[in-house]
Each structure stands twice: as structure tokens, then as C-alpha cells.
Amino acid sequence: MQILDQAVAILRAGKGRIEGAKVAAKFEALAALGDKAAAIWQGYLANPGAPGDKYALVTWVGADRSKQLYELSLEARPLVSEICAATGPAARFLVLDESPIALAFVGLKEGQSGVQLAQARLATQQATNKHLRVLADQVRSAKPAAAGKAAAPAKKTAKPAARKAAPKKKAAKKPAAKKSAAKKPAAKKSPKKK
Image 1 (spheres, rainbow, N blue to C red):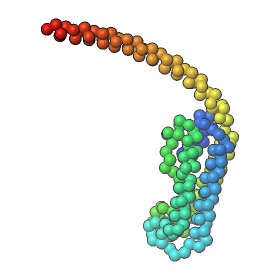
Image 2: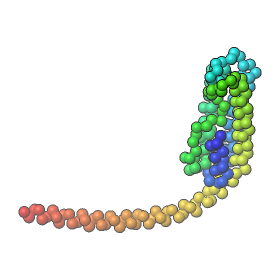
Image 3: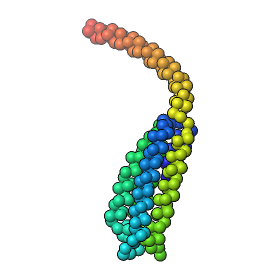
Image 4: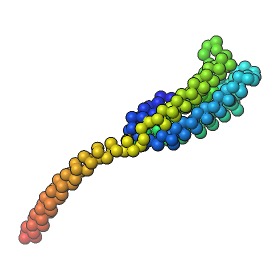
């Protein structure tokens, strides 16, 4: 959840294109997906079934539940991208490799059962859901978008002045090129005299 924490920090600093209600709604949607994932984990813990192998949790949880968790993760991915995009230019530094959904594609530690790891994954998912709701509240209380946009034009006014000076220098170089082009036809006349 580090990328979402960074995105909220950028938005709260007023550096992003913040629309608090819209971004908070995306956080709430992520938390709702997390609630669905928590329900899947709780369903497994209520009826664990036959034990799997000693290497992977997916063999304990089952393919159907694992697939449901993965599909929830796929649904969450665009929401995470949209939240990060709301940070504006700073989004290019955020890496979208984290999922707010606790997946079943993890290995078991030596001596650990699938039920024990599933309980840990459920606890992780519930903590993530709570954290997503806290982030939604922080975004709602962030500075309005107008405050962030008011500071940006002041920086942009200085840059166009520098840009206008550069084309004048280029324009000065172009007439020099025309003078050298004028000398070349004179050079061509001398070979015709031979």
C-alpha cells in the first residue's frame, strides 16, 4: 500500500489534480473490493476442506477461491492507477506493482498450515481495508484543487519568457545561413569560366 500512501501524501500537499470526493470514492471502491476478498477468506476459514500440500496456500484454498481473489485484484488495479494519476506529474514516479487484495498465491513457511496462513491473510486484508478507509478520509480533508492550481500558473509565467528568448536567437542564426547560401552561387560561376 506504499504507492497509495505516497499518492495521498502528494495530494494532501496540493501538488496533484485533486478532486477529493472522486478520489475518496475510488478509495472506498477499493475498500469494498477488499471486503469481498475478506469474505472469501472467511468462507475458506469457515469450511477449510481437505489440507493441501506443504508448499503453496493455493492448494489449501482451492482454485475457485484463488481465482475469485485474483479477479478482485484485477478489478482493483485500474482504481489504483486512477488514484495515482490524480497526483498529476508525480504519478510517473509511482510503481503500480502492489495489490490491495490479499492473494492466495503465496508459499507456506516450514511447519505452517494453510489455515494458519489464511488467518494471517484475512488479518492482512482487514487491516488493508481499514487503512484504505483512513486514506479516503485523508483525501476528503485535503486542500481543494483550486489551491494547487493557483500556485502552478506562477511557475509557468516565468518559463514562457525564457522560451521567447530562445526563438530570437534561432532567428538570428537563420539569416547567417542565407548569407552563406548567397556566396555559393558566386562560387558556381567561377567553374563556368573554365
